[in-house]
Amino acid sequence: MTRILIVDDVPLFRAGMTSALADAGFDVVGEAEDAEGAVAAAEELQPDLVLLDVLMPGLSGLDVVEKITAVATDSNVVLLTGSESEEDMLQALKGGARGYLVKDMPFPQLVDSIQAVAGGGAALSPQMAGKLFDVCRQLLRHQELLQARKPTLTGREIEVISLVAAGKTSREIGDELYISENTVKNHIRNILDKLGLHSRNEAVLYAIRENLISL
Image (cartoon, rainbow, N blue to C red):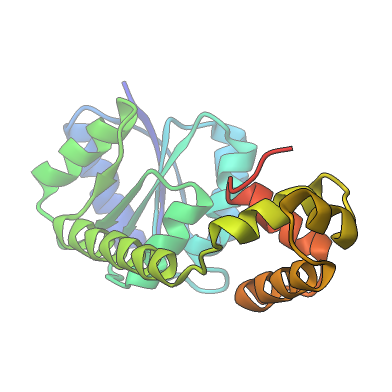
């Protein structure tokens, strides 16, 4: 039987939720009325799942998600809230929450969500899942734009930076590539300008990080 801690600042809501969850076969082991009380209760009771409101007096539920997961390492935190804020959802997930549910969802759907989290899964209300999907899509598009704007080095510039990484001087690089020392210096200057860097060492580190060269 899943052991649940309910955290909400409205006594009537806590009482109704406790009764409904008990009727659905869950074991409500405790209640808390604020975020600080939630941390203390979670540490003492070690519930399987914490149903945590966002909007409460003092600290919000979002402020203590990490604290709860730190003191009750086996507890899953699920935000049950009236807030449909995208930022609140992202902060909750970043803090370690396994679910973000809105209070106007049908009770049978809440039960299914709790069971999903208790079984090792995660749960989002449909409207919040849509917002998370939109965020992920925006991040992917942003990543594609960054990739498209990433400066590229020519084959000769990669040869030059590879020899710089090997510790060779501009004269030694010129001798090896059959070009003048000044041409080598021009290549290095172009590399730094392209990458917005200030030193050979920075250019070498960039080339290694981007798998353009290997040591």
